[in-house]
Length: 452
Image 1: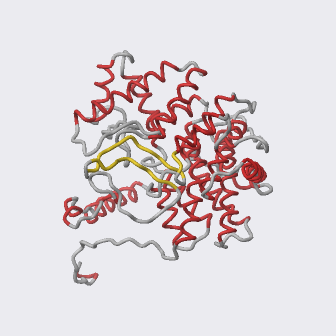
Image 2 (image 1 turned 90 degrees about the horizontal axis):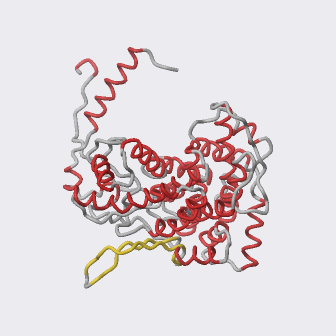
Image 3 (image 1 turned 120 degrees about the horizontal axis):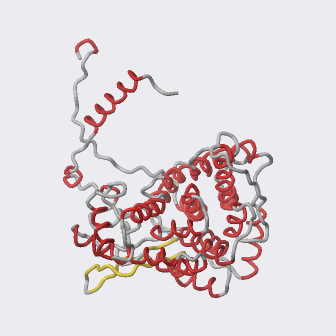
């Protein structure tokens, strides 16, 4: 219900008071040696835990000095490049295999993979009338909120919802991994029908096809897709599954798990983190930025014009005026993001099938020019390169995924990593995570109400 004009004015006044009395002098962070964002000026993260789930390499030691190098990502000690080359060369879908690896710490053999894939397929169902009673009721324009609400509501259908024994948590996590695509796509269809007045499609998931194939099957009215489409989406899901323990949503998973709460509350908290545009929404920003670029650059093959537009982005004169070139740069990687390098070949293959090579070449050119423009305009503490978000939105667009599903696709992948980290936290520690904050507010004497 909207506020009256008087109440709105009062809220604005109180907001200004809140800002005035809460703003902290940024110089104090250096004075007290507080790492803002839990990272130092070189991007090195504060060590908050140990993990066996994944590892990121972005630098190496040369002559006793730390120097940037091509980024590497490891799942359970295996280089992701080797893992993806393995299932791609055998024309296998990788989602179930990589899920098994991240959760259980070992690559499955053929028999183990077949049993696990069958179990995951059997878990692709929702409680009776859940779609009607939960997903179709009060549809949201934001699918991440729909996801979180669905996850929290599923708690009510679980007779052992609060049981945090490892076997029960594993059961819950496997079920969530299986139904996240249903939550996401059904939530979109409800939104598209009730809010956008479009036709409603609710397809049953296939039991003998991959997660990527199911997403496309559930989304499209005719349930059809090409092999290239499904394999590119499968690769995108694998590359988004996990990314070290230090990203915001995975850290959230550890923090909330450490409190002893249930799986549904933990995953809903992680979804709230991923929803943020600084985390899961970056690929949408990239797509919007390129739409703005196309509207404001006359000749898309003129590199000088492209550089001028990128300079305007940095100078807060173009697009959203935030001073950012979205999709370029990463908190950890500097020379290269291994996920972007792996993904790029698949992106090109899909662009050929979709007759979008002009767009692919434009992305390729901006990827090459952006680091040059940034380094010439700003003091650099480390290098910058394209991250996976630079290409993922472009791919989702070619696949016909609506923008509303871009971040949920991230969630459908990252639920695997969250699950692995939740199990790891439960197995290895019984301490609640409670970081230290330094109070800089001086002590004040209380003043009676009539004397204020």
